[in-house]
Image (tube, rainbow, N blue to C red):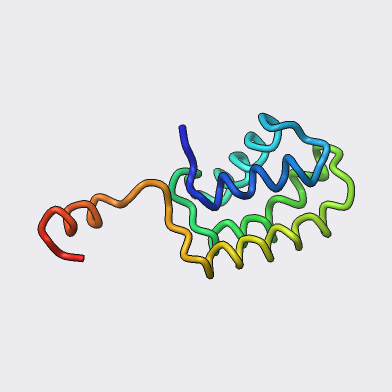
Length: 105
């Protein structure tokens, strides 16, 4: 299942910035998102930034990732940049789809 642009960005950043491989990084981020009551396919950069600040450090510590605080600070900054660039969830809501079909912008 594909995730939002923010989810995909964070997973790639975690893979690059830590000792976790791609599957471990994606699984770790999915667990943190699920704990927050969100979904990977529709999580926004601002929602994910809160998850990174409040939940992800603990998940990274449990997996033996060193310097999780610095990593998470870097991830939050990247997510803020992503949000400013206009990142949208990968999946449109049903309301947005019907508005487009109805000719509304």
